[in-house]
Each structure stands twice: as C-alpha cells, then as structure tokens.
Image (cartoon, rainbow, N blue to C red; front, side, top):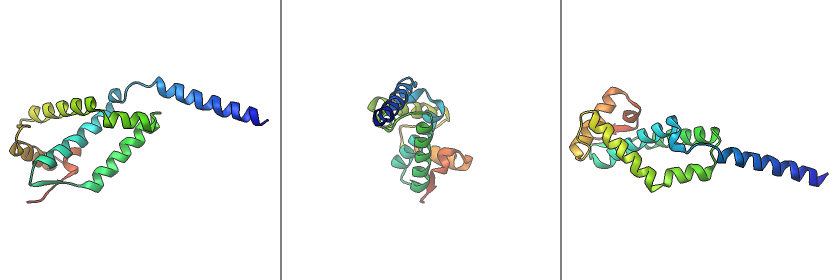
Length: 136
C-alpha cells in the first residue's frame, strides 16, 4: 500500500513537472512581462531622478502579486527566479523601457528627461506613476 501511495505521489509530481516544462517562456506571458516593464520603469526613473522616490511597499506588494500570478499560471519558483535574474531579460526590458519613454516624448538618457517622464506618469495616474512619489 505504501508503494502505491509513493507511485501516485511520484506520478503527480512528474505530471506537474511535465506541465511546467511545456509552459512558454515567462517573457511570452504578456501580463507578467508588461508588469515587469512597469516596475522596471519606476525603479529606473527613481534611481536616475533625484526628485522622485519609490513607494517601496507598494512596489514590493505589486511584485509579489506578479510572482503569485506567474505561480498560478504553473511556473515554478526556479523558472520565475531565472526570468527575473536573467541578464538577457533585464537588457530586453531596459530596451523596451527606453523605447517607451522616448515614444512618450521624453529623453530616457538624462535625469531631466526621466524626472519629466516620472512626473507625467504621476500626473496621469498610471501604474508607473503609482510607484513614484515626489520628494522635492
């Protein structure tokens, strides 16, 4: 009987692992990837702009929600960590962010451009703006 329980448990674990292996890369999950872009833009803006700061608790709560969403889609902690820590993904998100800022009419290469972008996002009430606060 014990062997039967072990076999059932092993089978369940293997089918879960097989299902996780069949998932597309997290970068292809639009909701996850877009939310990572918004968070990255807020972090980069606050890092480069001396008059804006992060709403840290709000940002961490948001990112935990993104992690939960990825887990709910079937991604393992290792898959999520690999996506978040990947230098290639960081570079890709940074390039998307630079384009997003430029397309919004701001200079992404200067603190002044990023400050203006951040202020505009706060005024617009966007997700990005909700992570930022004015510290003037």
